Amino acid sequence: MAASKLEYSPVQCTNRIAATEDAIFVLGGRWTIRVMIGILGGNRRFNELQRTVKGISAKMLSSELKKLEVNHLVERKVFAEQIPVVIEYIPTEYSES
Image (tube, rainbow, N blue to C red; front, side):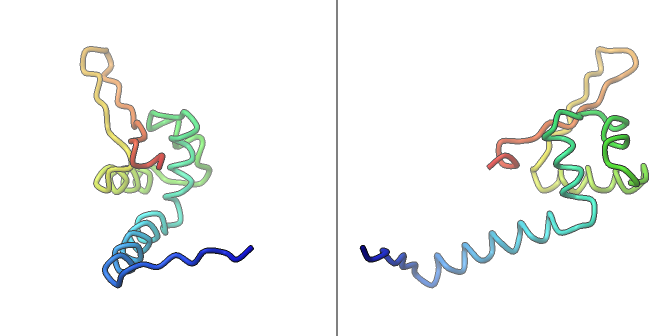
């Protein structure tokens, strides 16, 4: 049984390579994957994530969360009706694909 060979046009190859490069760029940081694993594991609040991701500083966690939000991997939800205000980071469908 011969394996079928996939053939892509140069444009398709370029698009696939660009998507892979984007993913590596976004997830390539020291803490990024650890933070995403924490979020996907159900830790949605800042302090929960900081306890889960051992060794990360508050400043670095804040920076990583902003980067993930800008790249549409997490959504920042603010529950202003609660006192104190609750902020959660929710994984997007894009991050789970």
